[in-house]
Image (cartoon, rainbow, N blue to C red; front, side, top):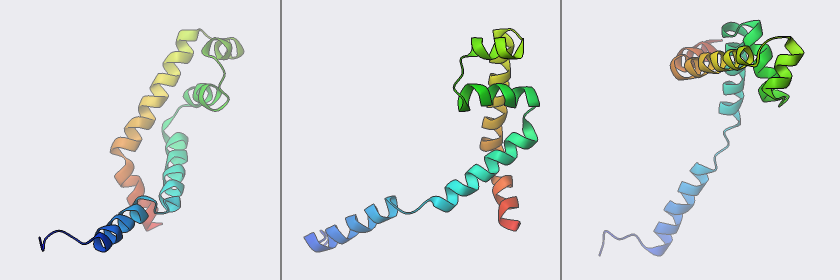
Length: 105
């Protein structure tokens, strides 16, 4: 029975666990947003960013974006998909390099 922690020890361990889960992640979020902006600026074409900004940020439907830009809906969809894939790839494979570069600057 010596291996079983007392109620007080178990409570302290659980409290530490909860504090760890609730730790402030402001710096990590700030770094992620900065790196995401950098990836948008360096990886996306103007057309990809324009379509993504209208769709995700302004929440405009693809058909309305197509009318506004004077292109087919399929073109808007393709630009959004390509941009999303580029950003996903940057965050998946380039995050380590981006974070290292961020730490050095």
